[in-house]
Image (cartoon, rainbow over all chains, first blue to last red):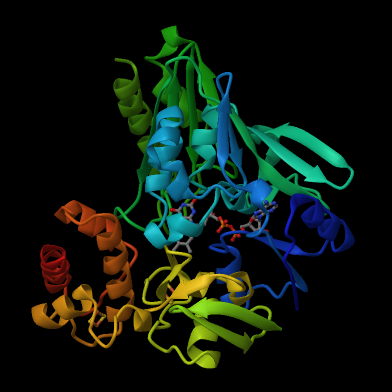
Length: 261
Length: 152
Ligand SMILES: Cc1cc2nc3c(=O)[nH]c(=O)nc-3n(C[C@H](O)[C@H](O)[C@H](O)COP(=O)(O)OP(=O)(O)OC[C@H]3O[C@@H](n4cnc5c(N)ncnc54)[C@H](O)[C@@H]3O)c2cc1C
Ligand code: FES
Ligand code: FES
């Protein structure tokens, strides 16, 4: 096994082009579990921790840029939490402090789990994912980026640079997650809702990918039912499909009560 | 591969396997067995250390990622032979039964008190939510953290 540690984005992209089999590792909270349990033995690891360009966030013209290396702890800090309240609420529910200090938005996109907690809040904020290789950059909407459970459109020579989201005008947002306890749970079902010009909801753990549902403000009454119908949940150890659908309907109703005041 | 890093304020180096965790390197190569290995999947917090001052699970950090960085383990909390206030409080409160979770909890509690000298019970609960204890039921651990906060 090799570990490559680029010191700049340019070097990282060059290394990824030379070694397309290299597995990027940022916070390691998904990758290390695979390594520790011998579930993966990549020939090469690409350590992104020293690539400063992937860190941080910035705000301009109603848009927020989130670097792929942004941690959940950073997303919870007051300034960013004010711009993206649902993402901050979702971040608070991820793991414990040790996980939130290391786990990143880029890693959540890379893993593309149907239960990824950053995904619903990003979907309701119109997230566009920026990808890059030595050949150049491209931007895909988060909906296009997620193609299946743990599958995304990232090409083997590409890295995720970050996402752009729109904060909206006075948008009201919230995030909810159902799980057996507060800390350290994989969502049985999760939901982000945003209300400004229209109604938007995105759910997790209720289908092969996190999905966005939109409606006019006037259709608030039927929205909970529509969100539940848009889901395609399965029965698994964490919950049944019918419970998930039911929970989504209730959560959407509660989220609208919070946001439509 | 060879890595160089700072541990508890001193320069160290070790030969590590590329896929190895910082926890494994600390315990097996670097002579710091204070951080415990229980789950190796970020669930229990017994491997907690500070990496550049940030609380992390050392089982989820690639040893190679710590190259050139600063690590503080539970062994580094005592100052000049005097235990850290959190360690003294854990002893005084009887917050230790089998002791396996203790190093991780001590590091997490020290990290909390560094950021927040007047933690509420909710703050304590939140700060320790990534650390599991199968023995104490947490009551004495809470007593110890409150005691340490009062002593600081
Ligand atoms: C105890 C525990 C609790 C957890 N709880 C939650 C939870 O509540 N909710 C939740 O959603 N997740 C949870 N997770 C999963 C994990 O923390 C998240 O998915 C996190 O966002 C991963 O980020 P990371 O930086 O650690 O990713 P890494 O492990 O470094 O990488 C994850 C994947 O993304 C790829 N990748 C990373 N960065 C890039 C990049 N810039 N370009 C291309 N590919 C990249 C990697 O190759 C890998 O495939 C938990 C994990 C643990 C261990
Ligand atoms: S051994 Fe690292 S969290 Fe359990
Ligand atoms: S004292 Fe035994 S696990 Fe905490």
